Structures are given as C-alpha cells and as structure tokens.
Image 1: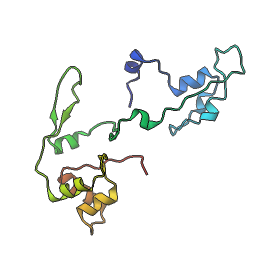
Image 2 (image 1 turned 60 degrees about the vertical axis):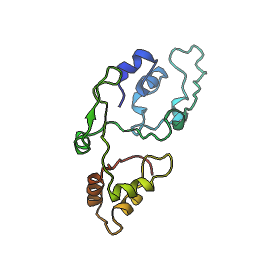
Image 3 (image 1 turned 90 degrees about the vertical axis):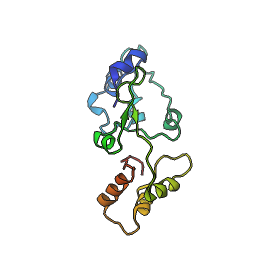
Amino acid sequence: MIDLPRLRERHPVITTLEYLRLHGQDPESESSSGYWPRESYISHPNVFETNRTKTPTQFIIENQWYDPQGINRVDHIPESMKNRGKWEHHFGPEIGETAGFWPEEEPTDISICLTSALLEGKPVLSWEIAKRCVSASQNNDEVVEDLLKANGWEVLHTFHS
C-alpha cells in the first residue's frame, strides 16, 4: 500500500491510469493483475507530443536493485501477531507510532530447529522446511501454523513460488 499524496510531495509520480490517459490509451486497458504489459503501454505517443510517431522509452528497474538484501516486504503487522509476540511500541518523531520490536524470548526446540534451518542471509523458510521442524508426521497445515506461532514464528504468505 502506498501513500500517494505523501509520495508526490517529494517525487514526480503518476499512476498507471494517469499514464494511459497521457498516452491516449483507454483506461480500461489497465492490467487488473498489476502486470505492466510493456509493449502495449509504450506503443502510443503521449498526448502532448507534437511528433505523433515518437513513442516513450522505458528503463526497467529490477526488484533486487531497490529491495535491500534479506528483506521481505509486508503490508502490515496484524494486531493478533503483535499481541502474540508481546510487541513493544517504540515512539519517535522519525519513525511514527507504528514502530516497535519483539522482546527476546528463550528459544524452544522448535525455534532452534527453525533458526538453524535458515539459509545464510535469508530471513524466511519454505513451508516444507518449517513443517519438518514442527513435526514430520503433522499434515494439518492449521496445526502446523498454530505450533509455529506457539514457538515464536509466524507464517508469511508471499507471491514467491
């Protein structure tokens, strides 16, 4: 989620809908999946271009260029997760009221197994590895998730395959 007005205070930003309008394209042609159909979107000159044959060029910024190594982006931390982990709020003018941290807790056998299974530089595990640490015989995903939470871990649903 992006605070567009705040972002626009510091950077020149347009939405895909605005981009399509500036290039004389039907706003209904916007991809509903978030995918940027590059060839389609850059095939029309912008409405201010006097040379109606000149189309835009685009530079592709790769995800790994702006996402710090070892970071997984999430939209928010649910209150239930904060309560479970005894989240301690940290207030300050530079970080706002949503900042905080979880206090250190004594590791359990399961959390030790999970931590030791982490690959160097990676802050997450695959579901299969997490299930193995919880119990090799446990096939019920809800039970596995409950056991992970009880041992200080959380399930992160991502778009990674």
